[in-house]
Length: 87
View 1 (cartoon, helix red, strand yellow):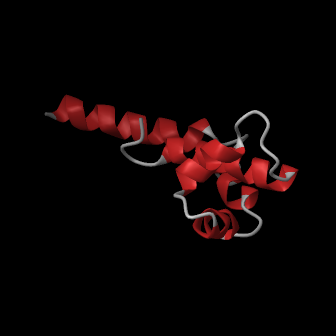
View 2 (cartoon, rainbow, N blue to C red):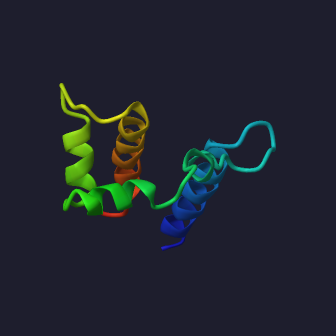
């Protein structure tokens, strides 16, 4: 059992240092990437779709959505990958 605990501790410290640059604070790119929290979700709700479905629609070839909406859709898809249980 001690070996398993050590492995977990090593993995934890590895995750903490993975995104750090020369003893700086961990990267907070996700927090700084969102300029207007909830804006894309509101757009999806107005369209009557879930966030994932709306993002897929917006990113399809030939979509007439604005560049800002397409960037938000791309970011929503990226964030979905970080959710626990995401495929």
